[in-house]
Image (tube, rainbow, N blue to C red; front, side, top):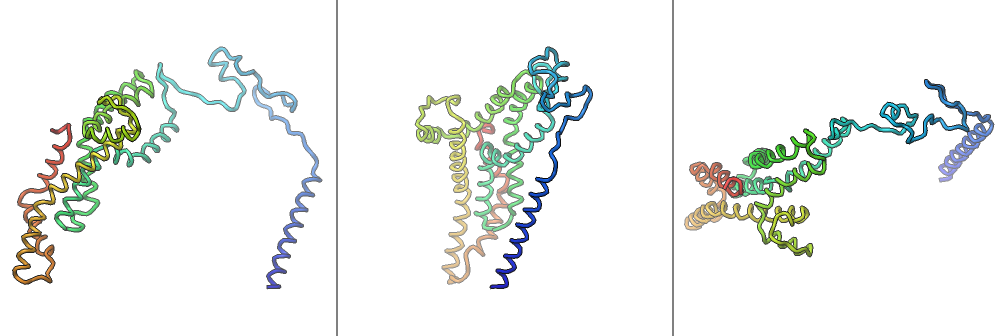
Amino acid sequence: MKKKKSILTGIVFKSIICLLVTVGILCILPARTVLATSTDPPLTGETENSTILHEPGTAQTPEELAELNIANTFTIEYNGSNGQINGALRILLILTIIAIAPLLLLCLTSYTRVLIVLHFVRAALNTQTAPPNQILVGLALFLTFFIMTPTATSIYTNAYVPYEAGELTEEEALTEAVQPLRRFMYGETQKKDVELFMGIARQNWDGELDSIPLTVLIPSFLVSELRTAFFIGFIIYIPFIVIDMVVASALMSMGMMMLPPTTISMPFKILLFVMADGWSLVIGVLMRTFTYFK
């Protein structure tokens, strides 16, 4: 312990000596006057005078504005009456959209209902990991793209194209882009869910879509999607539960109580699902639960 204390004391002492030497060197160095470097047009070169050749607000034309000797400036490119976003800012916006894209996909589209129903199908078949999660997620994504195509087309036609043509401002384009999503969500949302969240927010609702805030519409839509998905999953489970009950009763009657019924019933479930063309039936019925395909 004494040896360690002596080592620490020596390190601290050396550090203090180095700090004092550095401070002494800085105090010995003579002070120098720093002047602005000459440019074309030349600057004043004096420390007492400002290096700004023209005062702000004196420019009358864009050419004179470009000649102002002010370092903290930025430019905005424009085309006609519609501003164009700088390339770096476009990249920033694209990266931001990519970051929040999963959240938008989960909360504002049909992805939630589709994925939950597909998982219920796999659970009812009791096939554990067949089909695997990657296949279910990929199928859910493509079905979501298929379902949301009319909404995406409406957003592109009514918001993006007029904005690029300079007919809409950014705020107007965002408002127009949200409207198709609001109509889609409202068509899949039950009124009792909207009334629930409007009551929680202590707001009155006249029964019209325009009077529903987006902060109320999104959770109402998600609750309705969960309710619908679980109801469809329950309907899917019924025939497979019947098969499990029949197989379990048969095994009990034969005295084979130690044999798990699911081991015998799973091949019969798969056979029934394949013979009935189950994937086409499930996906077809699932598509028709959405308002656009009814």
